[in-house]
Image (tube, rainbow, N blue to C red; front, side, top):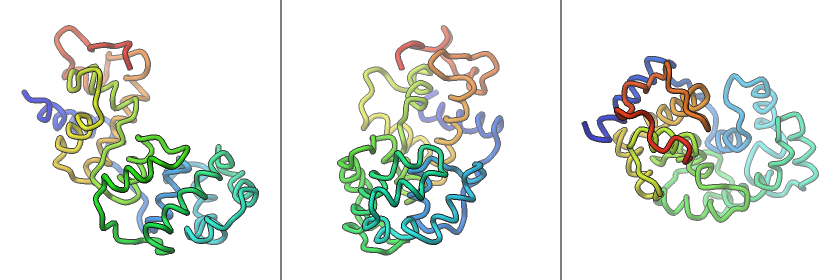
Length: 225
């Protein structure tokens, strides 16, 4: 069985265990960008508050966010968990957005995903996995946020070898679900769920939906990620 076949089987097992993905519908791309930056999914206790902020005021459009003072953003983001800490990155992302698309809140993403990845990674406060999360969940581009949880699952199951190169990890996950943004979103959510319950700093393989896919000797490099 190839690594890609294992990854497809993993999606099937995780979907059966955790259910299907539900994403917010009807939001502009800018609104989804801010939602991902804030780390507030639909259904979170602060989601309704964030929806209100995205409809009026400095968060409603990138042009408004870019000219808001840091103090204004800190104040309006105070009701959002850790929101005030993200005021500066919101302003920086808004400036980046204006340079790319103007004040259009749902623009066409017409250049390569790699170009967006490289320019967003220049913004202080945005790590590689966060950039890819923004591009996948907000812009529907075929990239995968290779965070620590995804690495733990992949390395412990032998799908990736240490040290992991970004290009190899992207290739595994993107090709493993045929490059479909919807399936990549589902895969990312499912890996987050299995990481929370089974594949944290210490692997807890008993009862894990992916237990049947482990190598015969158990998880590889269990303390390495």
